[in-house]
Length: 186
Image (cartoon, rainbow, N blue to C red; front, side, top):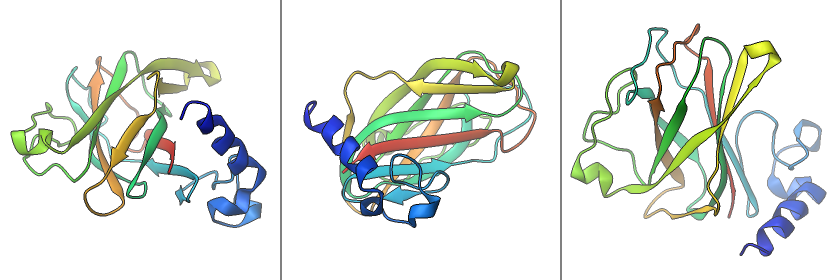
């Protein structure tokens, strides 16, 4: 799979119409620059949850439950969050679920508390801990640093649900200052 993955990504860049959408609205990956794209090759899905402008405590949920359209199976090859303003230091744990967590404890700006029913749906946890400050400190982007892609096979539907947990004590200037992106292949 490690040798096949770069070839699949290169093919998607060479043949953007395989990824869906109109050619004029496509990025170099063949998927829309903004929005969602699923294809038989490449997945890009974004979420901009509503977040609090009050200071977060380490361990708090950032943005509540976030749905990502991914397809029924595949590999997450990259996950990232971009913060557009406010102060951010630390990292984010992105918990991925095969179905929406229903046990409570996934509300924005509150401590994460999962039930055994929710943990049974857990696909994996991605640490978004490779953070870079951009644009004179007004933008911070944090990416996952996992060595291998995160495999998933959903029991039903084509949506992965994510819950972000902050590690640190960030404060944000606006309620839409965090955008999460999952990328991968099917």
